[in-house]
Image (cartoon, rainbow, N blue to C red; front, side, top):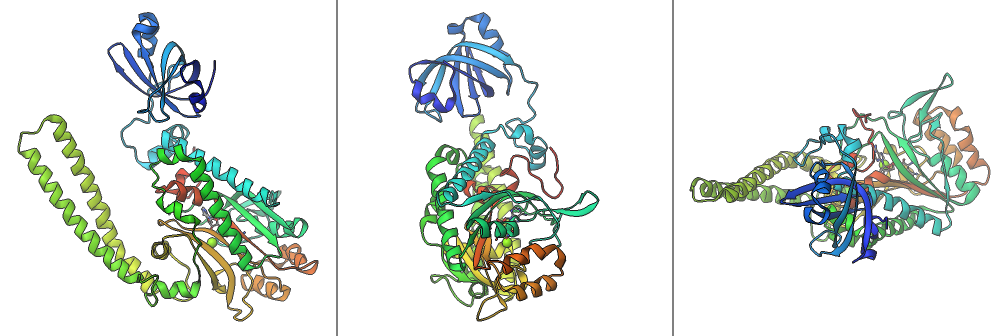
Length: 506
Ligand code: 4AD
Ligand code: MG
């Protein structure tokens, strides 16, 4: 019976047929151990020359990595295997023999891997990340659909900027200038006045020439927009939404998170309430003027310096110890290799610690001198979330650094009723949103101040003339949340084929 690895537990003790690719192969006398992957999972398959006969075993010996095979055999429980089962093969058919596979087991640099992204996607880690991404998308739709939100598709070709004019991709629309959409929000606002509760889920484009581990030129954004919601209701929904998605991933992506060796301690804490602090309060925390649960931002960085220095000394001592052991001449070859590998790891750790030590003064200065009207840098976000240990919501921003559509605060018009959610573990901003300005005169003033073309916003201003109501929304960057939940070093691994500054192929 033809089946998939995902279903294998149902067939314990029975004979099944699997079709897939050789992810790895180990040979020993008369035996071949194949790690087969079929897209739905990975399983060890044992082929014995004695069982299938010498003639049938010959082609198995020639199987290279990524060759395709059809394997028939009995499903046997084996606790030591990931997934808990192995296949004892009785019949093997080669579908294709692969050329020498360029992605070997040895370490490759990120550029090499990104150049081979079309193949890299098959590796176990990438497989797991794409499955988490898929499940996050599913959970997002489930969350909003269950609440009666209507999904809408916003246009990609747009005539005007939404978030700011500096980072637009310009294109040509029948001879007229047009831009790739930075955000579906303004269209979402129009739809919310028709449907009440809506969300967009589509590709968005940002042209800033940024090479950070958080930036893509093309990314997917979820943008809900809710009629009759103020900022507090907006924040309640954001919190419930993120808690729902994280709980769903913890429940349904256990194998994937294990494959990624994701320590889920911090993710378990997401069910606690997210602290809500104003931007002004966050600035005071960064400057070390107020503490968080007895913890001071600047003192924490001073402690980091001490800790890094101590750890470097410890690494150096261990390296000397191991070098002396090797030099002693009594170790077996395996033991020498083991110690040498440990030394290499320690040297890398020292390198990382030294670069941290170089960076801390920069982070320290950024925090200590943080101006009240400043936007957070990456290190500022990391400091804030480390102090709290959970996602946090920073609201009430200086209006001058936020988009034109944000509602001005009743009591202090220089304050915008916006909110950013900062994820812990160094991931920073994953959500940006807020309440929208409903005062048409203020909006016109802001559009002028931002030097945006008024004629392009006629339709948007109509929303304030016909059935004007308070409303709010937010945007979640899909790749930012994938990156955080999988605890990746870089956002380029969160999307099948990343588009970023300097990368448009494959
Ligand atoms: O904060 P942003 O720019 O907000 C908006 O676009 C609003 N119109 C959203 C709304 O209120 N409807 O972007 C929202 C989120 C960010 O918090 C971040 O998660 C993600 O989109 N994002 C990016 N992700 C990857 N690469 C980039 N270059 C990103 N820029 C923003
Ligand atoms: Mg933002």
